[in-house]
Image (tube, rainbow, N blue to C red; front, side, top):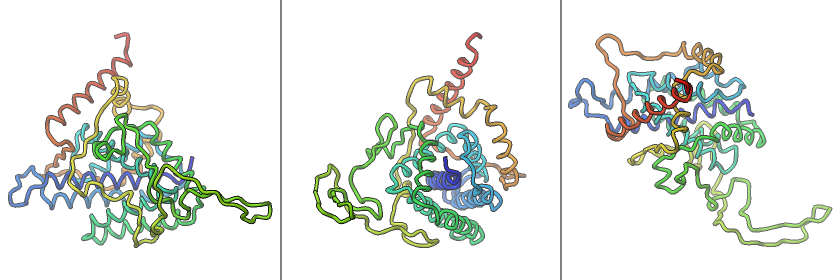
Length: 351
């Protein structure tokens, strides 16, 4: 397990969360002069994004995050994003928060799996931060917070070896290995199977610094090449265009980690499996976990110093729905309640 995986996990999942929230806020925004008191406007959207990004890149929190440490448990990490998502006037119910977290985790899992080489996880992170900077381009104070995190990433990860990046990648994949939630974008693009597992390509650019497969070289004991043999491959491989920039500014080349919601398209998660899966899902998100108590207490102290916005006075919190229709949201809530009931029954079989 790598002690350097946590910042990359947190920042990339946070970037995906911001992509989703921005897309849904835009979809539900009403022109300011037409909006009722309880409806979103573009001003509200910008305010929500600014508040969440300010909280996410809090200097004290970043300092703690970049200390070498093991990954948080899934429950503890989910607690962090619950707090982040409500660091503004926006409010999400349980079903929408579940859906948000599912989309975040599956998107980043796909990106980690498809990275041409382990070091490219850093380029994926830079793509997320570049997009976040675009969200707050009119707020120089928040931009400075994000740029400071950029510099920390370059300083900490710029000198790591290929082996260290491989360990980081393995640590991230271990975190994601039991997550197989189906997402409509991936299903429609045929990069995910109906069982929730991803389809990895066998064609396209090879990793930077490597050659297109199809040639075997043989050497003698002196290191001189003595023979070449060519072979055919099942994939259509091509040389890489160029290496992406690992600087504060530059062309990342790699598209993984860019905003896949920038083009208007419906994004849904699909629940599948038996009642056992429902109970497991409910248990993770609802039932207290004594083993994680100390970890959660630490996170509570750490996050306690962050500026979590609460509606005050005449101001009311705005509700954001991550479902296309109210019927879909009601169904998701019903499934969640069913999972909780099953979980309670399993825990108390003698009742």
